[in-house]
Length: 383
Image (tube, helix red, strand yellow):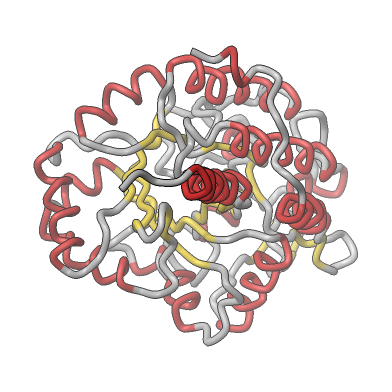
């Protein structure tokens, strides 16, 4: 029996409706968490040193305290503080946090444990960023732990249920076979295969590494990588991200999770380098603390600049679903305050949390959820 014209028309309209629904779905937006701001030991002491000079106090997380001339305390280890962070993230319109996973360092997973203990996560989900070198040390014996996290109903998924997992820098000992085993284990546990994303520095190289590992997409952790007292203005950083990541991935047809940035400004770490930053010589400022003024210049993103960049990332993602099928965005970062990228409210000069970045992000992300998908004038010209 031949299908009637009416039936064919109905099937075509139904297919178009599905495609339109997929393309008009708001992007899934997350931010990187690097949690060296909690507890009394470990890296928190070094972040306190980096942000101790008064010129950098405007970067302090909102729960920090100034305890003396050039001295601060940054211990956010309380359930109340973490749940307030959840409230801020939800108010900003974020869908998920991507926690850098430290496995064997209890001082660096305090925030993760506090997050998971929160009764009301306000629809803010989580996923992991693993590090290639660390995963080589952990080995496939770590797959069972990851699978348990994938089972968590609050773990972020993409593409109708695939757990989202980032790997920062290619693993060397774990290759395609081992990562395939992780996917097999997920399927055996009744889950879908994880969506594996390699975070690197150069899309062309990352694409080759992605293929060699059997991963699904590439992205980035940060725009920078170099430590220097001289950094590009934030507007220039955004232009470099657009040129070197978004347009490069589009031109080379590289599947990607859209990378966006709240900034890159390593001057606090250049002045007082933490021990995990190799080869950076200290360049201390001899200006007396009482004479220091906030070091806010063109390198520092204004709320309006941040909002414009994130708006552009949203539009690019919506226009390029063929390049970004996961419909996901990752922002550097939620709390990389001493390295230069942060969204978390900071300690205002009056002691009140400065929520300007949260407010700016909220306007953009909530508007995006309601706006139609913009049409790209270059869409048909792409190879």
